[in-house]
Amino acid sequence: MDVHPDLEPIAFLLGRWEGAGVIGYPTMESANFGQEIVFGHNGKPFLTYQSRTWLLDAEGAKVRPLSTETGFWRIQPERQIEVCLAHPTGIVEIYVGEVVFHKIELRTDVVARTTTAKDYNAGHRLYGLVNGNLMYAYDMAAMGHPLQSHASAELKRAGDFDE
Image 1 (cartoon, rainbow, N blue to C red):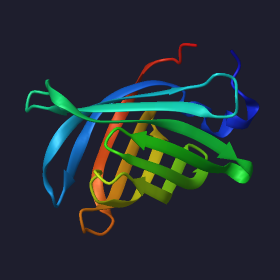
Image 2: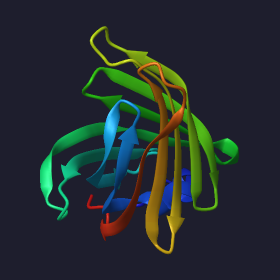
Image 3: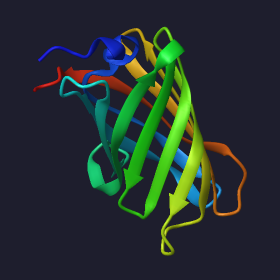
Image 4: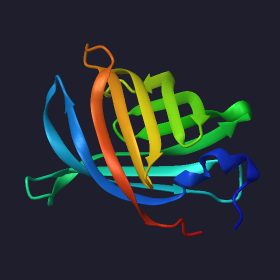
């Protein structure tokens, strides 16, 4: 299936990405984590997105699942982008941002939480293709703390998108 022409600015994301990174926040100890992200499409002008992470031990073996999120990435005119994400912890986020070559910068426009979700107020994400790898950094404002670093990772392409 052909990729919708509107997706050209973000088509570099398509496929399965795997790698590792570091998480930390004032409310938790820093740790290493593994991650898989899958960007797909169905011929319409959006990408599907699925991410899952797990805690890694000192040798890099999986210890337990951490977070998962799913959503849609929608490119807009003039290389603007909208991202809708849902988390099983009761949080839904809408990000807005811009694509510049192979760099994507996103900031939350809307955060909605269920009554049982943790206190989470804002996010800032930066994605970039560097030497063929997908790098990203994620800052968040949560649990009474201002926007600050939470996670970063380097992911390698592990497969093409399968229709």
